[in-house]
Length: 463
Ligand code: BES
Ligand code: MN
Ligand code: MN
Image (cartoon, rainbow, N blue to C red; front, side, top):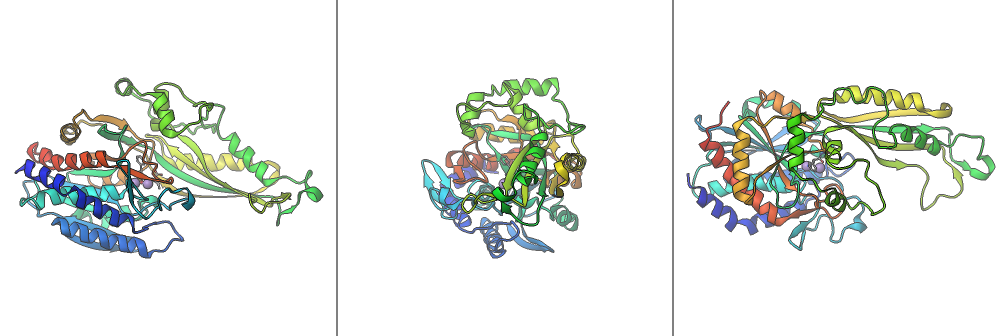
């Protein structure tokens, strides 16, 4: 096993890796309903080609209702640990085209970052698998582990078919360790291992008081305004500190242990940097202070109004609208049951609708939270790989985001350790406009991944 040859191959081939990543970014593989299903299929085909080029045995597996899953297998040897490596090739829609400095699907490098939709989330994750496997196989050696790559085409809509797909293909996907390349660096240049995720549920609420919009001068006053009604309902769901105000909705939240609080402290989290990264305007107060900012984000539920629609900014005259709609996203903390949170939320909304307006509520995207300890030696192997690649110790962090398939997959594969590794960073702006990948960190993430295969093999981690 010649680690240095593999590392050198990855470094020498880095420009090609970037070119391949750019080619992937050019394919607008948006998985959302209502978008053209051809680009996701095209991206799947491109991924298949990349895995094959890396020297893996690449397969496309169709699954009813889902874009194709792309798999890549290395040669299997029974004495080696098996790694299941996950990334997703689907992306979010670009949002407002005019806000992109370079077009979303025309990759461009500026100031050491690669801009484009999916540059980080998660086509960089796809390329980590391709380039790390290729580094070993194309430097004339076998991979030190049995590698199974699985590329998902519908993570951004909650991976609705992944659990079924896994069940149907369990024998081929069984592994000792799961690696998920879809998380973020705590700060640029800092290797980070994510040990908790929040779950999510999304509720779309519509309140209606009329059959049609009316002249607000002729009718306004005695008739309930649906927008005002919706605002009242939404405002009632949180208190003055942004905490959810629905009885019972904090049920199950696992409070941080003494050791976790210590761990949090050792991050020396800087609230000023947090504000700056998030672009919080100077006069705007945060709803937490100190380390509570991270606890609130990683370990407690939150409600965000993702969108609200009624009336029109361009064409709206003096009207009294007939109906108002909002999409509410609730992040669910480790320990909580998202279905229970959903039921409490729906009940509360219904009970709080004023003036007898008609209400309809549709819920989707119910994904569970996840949390792990890091006792399994695979975590130590990853941390050593990261330390040697980044030149500093890896941090254990939480994430407020959701990766829907993680809890299910870990369970289905017998509780194997899951290593959630970073491609993004606080400047990535995933899901927003001008998404970008820090190329310095991507290079290090690739070196870490090449090293990880060697570390895992030499520590003989097996279940
Ligand atoms: N890669 C993200 C999750 C993420 C983002 C982790 C930033 C760490 C930092 C993933 O693709 C994602 O966006 N997940 C969705 C899941 C949802 C669609 C069910 C999320 O969290 O909104
Ligand atoms: Mn992602
Ligand atoms: Mn995403």
